[in-house]
Length: 164
Ligand code: OFO
Image 1 (tube, helix red, strand yellow):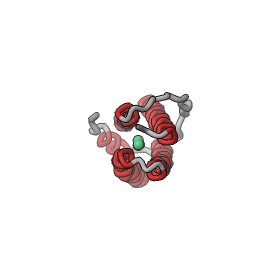
Image 2 (image 1 turned 90 degrees about the horizontal axis):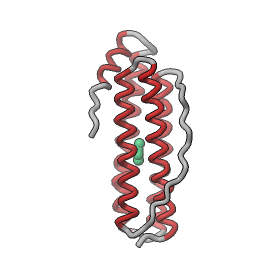
Image 3 (image 1 turned 180 degrees about the vertical axis):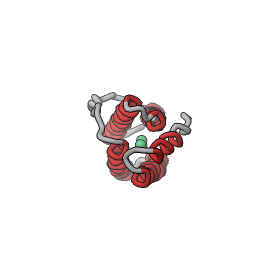
Image 4 (image 1 turned 90 degrees about the vertical axis):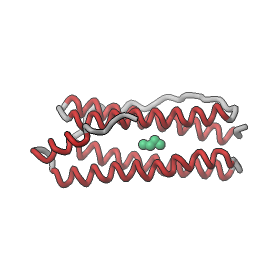
């Protein structure tokens, strides 16, 4: 059985994952509208991944006899300055999520909730990947510049990201 503080923390993290999904969907829509279909695809897959993270957390709550309480999500921005701006925001956002996941783990430690500790370890590992992906694309964007052939090549490469 989940303790009340653990259930509250998991419910908050579900909201953060859905917020992440919504932010990446907004970025995908923007990329699509400026003709960067590869960026749009990559970010759409990211949207789906974040929804899967949220669902994984709902399963943890349900499996432990808890109650999921969905919360309001934030309105994401509709406009972004450039692909560089988007990926600076993706990296900053993932760093924020890493801090939140670490806090979730701290709650599981405080509550002596060993089962949740094991579950949250998956998210801790996932955040390494999330930050690495954003950093790699940001580095590639710095090399490619704001526009031109290199940016188009990167856009084509990102289009190859497939949904899981
Ligand atoms: Fe982008 O990561 Fe979820 O947790």
